[in-house]
Amino acid sequence: MLVAILDEGLDAYFDACDEALESAGDDPAERLEAIVAATVRFRTGHPVKSSIVLTEGRSLEAEHLERYRKNEERASQQFRDIIERRRGRRLPHPVSQ
Image (cartoon, rainbow, N blue to C red; front, side):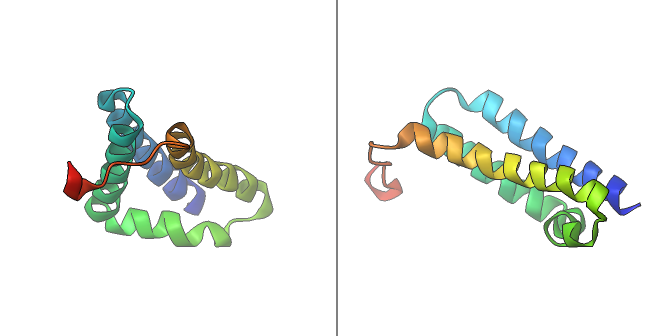
C-alpha cells in the first residue's frame, strides 16, 4: 500500500514539474522559477501526499527503497541541471528586474 501511495505521489510531482518546465522555455532563470513554483504548488496543493512522499520512504523494504531513492535523486537532479546551466552567470536579483 505504501509503495502505491509513494508512486502516485511521485508521479503527480514529476508530472507537475514536467508540465511547468515544458511551458518555461529555455532560459535557466525562468526554468528555475517554474520548477520552484511547481514544487510549492504540489506541496501546498497536496499536503498529505507531499508529506508521505517526503517522510515515509524510510519505511520501505529494501526491494522498493532503491527505486524510491532513484526518484529522490531524479527530483534533486532536475534542480541541479537548471542551476548548472546558469553556472558562471549571475542569477538576476528579483529586486533589480
